[in-house]
Image (tube, rainbow, N blue to C red; front, side):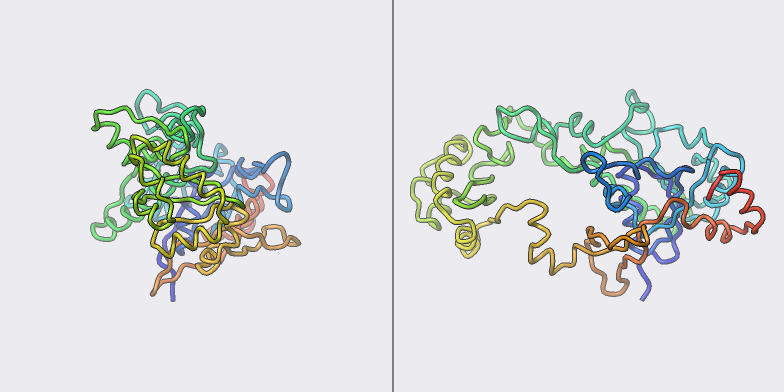
Length: 393
């Protein structure tokens, strides 16, 4: 069985995390993703976890978002490098880039440049703030978007400073916008034969991911504040939050307090107004949960159909029985020939007719340059000249 996007060619000019994460997902679904890196390799290859912490010589951050691709490295400012890039995009179904607005135009690879050699191309531009407007020229990055759109200011307790979510939540949602709208544009082209340019950006993705929060804040005549006791969201009543137990923590989501009092045989919790007195209610329930063993408490709540789960860290989640059952952690071959496979996240969907497969490890810099150049019709001597001129190789 072929993969869902078998036969779709993606010319990938993305860097950092948002863009590469999106193109990796297209590759997992079967697209032939050709990653175009600068001659010395994408800068994200040098990102470390901590101080000089690499995984067998490779950045774990880079490895996380660059499987299912082939790599060609090009000096796009060199005439020959530019011509090769044009040849590549002329054969591509999709071009994806996430430079600041105007960079691809200056390289002679903007939408109109590509459209001149590939009229029905789907061209995805992903930026920080959008292609125009007062902030268009500013650099876009996940933390900046969390700061600018209220995510950081909504996270934490009332007396805490704004607290960023400690993983790239905006990059992730923005990556999904790239994938979603790439597929939408391909579907439109399949029906009409018409390609188009699609613009997405981190700022809009950050706003989109907070559709509930913006709808509340823009329409409700009330000032909502973070909870002092740790209710998990400023719009929700008790008991929504994390509770300490005798040996860990447990999360309890939306549940009527009188129902919780019945399940736990703990009448005091039913006496509070779930929103107006939510901090007092949470502190009262916390007194009870501190005396409970996590496993027993979760079992009791789940048996009564109360939404609850034990709290774990990422290392602990790797052993979660359902995560294991779903196959969401997979071992992938490392780019270095003598290194052990590394563990990373799998494909978060299953297909009954066109299964997704991870059949390419992350590539070494320019690993597939010769292969790609031959597919574009370049001969041995010309390829040799390109390598000697440090245009590719």
